[in-house]
Image (cartoon, rainbow, N blue to C red; front, top):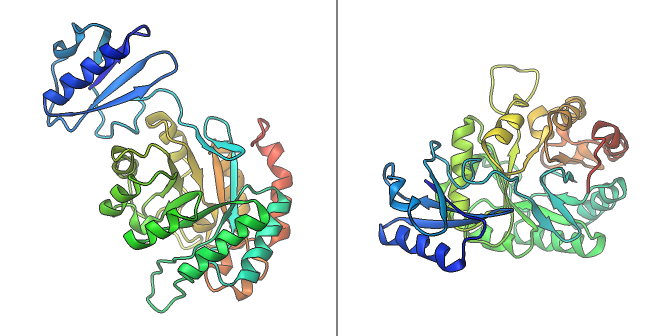
Length: 335
């Protein structure tokens, strides 16, 4: 249920509603809006009677919530979430580009690519220090040393950093370095990791699971937000299908579907959807046209030598050309 307060409601009236919700054994989640405060009721096992709240001073409406996801849903919050970073914003028309290699391989590699994507107009540097791979024999990343390199990239280029946490231990380490913590597709339903990420005061990018429905994806985001971290970015990266022409099936329909159901920003990773360099830019253009809030793209100056996902990494000159195209694809511009 969502208890909507009058725009002139006092703090004492808001506190009284919160106290009543907690006295009933539930969790109260105040949600400030543009003109008024709403209070979400969480952890209730079933529907509540609106009469419990509508007669309280300052209350104008008590609205039942039909969706299983609450805090991330439009029923709880009508306005789009905007996530702020030093010098830029993400969401509600603020578009960002995150680019870099799949994995950090060396300081020279990372700094070389970072300078190139920065010159082309990227605002974030992506690169995995920890790499969960399908095969235990594949390159797993540089770990702590990779995080040290990412820190140096930010210091030398000014790019913000996004990198993946794969477990509780790496989450703590990543949170000390990254501007955005990435939760990868394999961990979308790692609920203990999601809860832990919800207790970190850093934006979290949540990739869609390989087989996840929209509801399952939003429920995963709910785990993070329910722990107090409302800075969640959804990332579509393709789902498994029967076709062999691409690594995954990029679900462009999910972008407007997310906008209908949730206030969270949604970005797209065309590189992991494509799996092939020649498909990345067509998918990126389509994602921009579909209305995403940003792109997460793989770029490598020597993809033939890459230790991870070289086949889907753009050459720097391809990325630079795409960035020159972007204003025509997105007339409203970006940060």
